[in-house]
Image 1 (cartoon, helix red, strand yellow):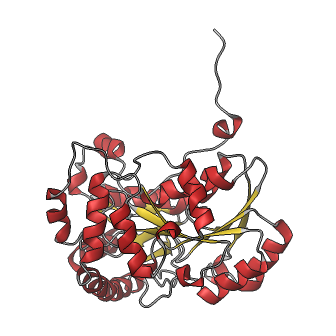
Image 2 (image 1 turned 90 degrees about the horizontal axis):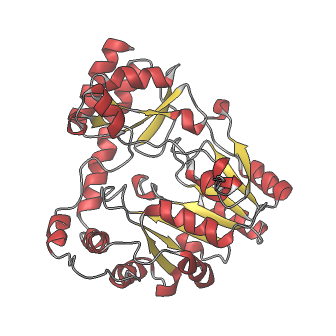
Image 3 (image 1 turned 180 degrees about the vertical axis):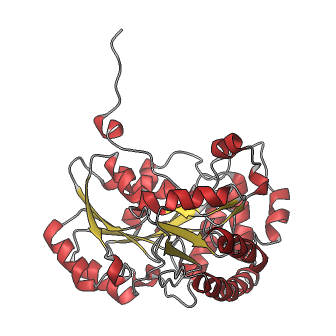
Length: 360
C-alpha cells in the first residue's frame, strides 16, 4: 500500500515546547500534578475571580454555545469603545494565531518574528508555507530592540505579517504605542500582529488597541491575567475587514459555553483583577530581591516574569522538578542557558528561593 504523506510544511515543522505541566513526565517521576508548584506559567497566581464559580453554575451544556460569543463581545466592545465587528473571540490566543495564518499567509510569503519570543508565531505561519525571517535581540542589550533596527528589517524583508509580542515572552520587554504606530504607518503593506497577552501585568501600560490602524491586529488573552488557563479564552481586535477574514476560517463553536460565561463574569468583576495584580507586583519585588541575593541576577523585565542565566537550563529545571518545583527551560526560545520564572504568591516564592540556596 502506498504511504499517504501530509503536506511538506507539516513534515518540516517541529512541535513547539511550552511551559505548564507535562503530565507524562510527572507520571514517569512518580509525582502528582497537584504536588507541583509551577513557576513555568505566567498566570495570575491568585486564581480566578470568585464570580467564576457562580458563572459555572449558569452554564447550559445541553445546547450548542453561541457561535458568535455575542454577550462577551458586547462587554469587550463596551470596555474598549469598539464596534462588535471589530472583535473576534477565540479558544485562547493560540487559536487566533492559527486563524491569522490560515487567513493571510500564502505559500512563500515572508513573516517577520522578533526573537526570542513565543514559538507559535513561527510555527503557525510555517505550516501555511511562509518563510520565517527572524530578527534576534542581543543579550548584551538586555534583549531590547531599537526602533531603527526593526524599521530596517521591515524595509529589507517587506513581510506580509510581522509578529510583535508586547510585553514580550519570555523577556518582559515592552514597546510603546508610539513605536507600534510608527512601524505600522511606515509599512502599510504589512499586517502587524501585536500580542498583548501579558499587558495587564505591566502597570498603566497603554494598549495599541486605541491606535485603530488599518494594518494592526491586537491579540489579547484572558487566560493569564484572569487565571482561567484551563478554560482557554482570548480575543482579537482590529479593522472589521481583518476580523471578517478570521471568522471565515474559524471552526464552528470553537469557544465553548463555559468559556463564554466565565469570560463575561471575569470582566464584570472589576475589583478583583486590580487587587490581585497589585499584590503580585509587591510579591515580585521581594522575589527579585531573593534572586539577586543568590547571585542569579535576572534581566530587567516590566512584567511579573523574568529570565535568568543559569548555565544548563534543562539540567537546572530537572534538579528543581525532583523537589516538585517547576521553572521554564528557555531552550525552545533559543536560550538554552536561561530559565524563565513567574512570580507566585509570597509563600510559594520563598519555597523556591530556599531550595535554590541549597542547589545553586
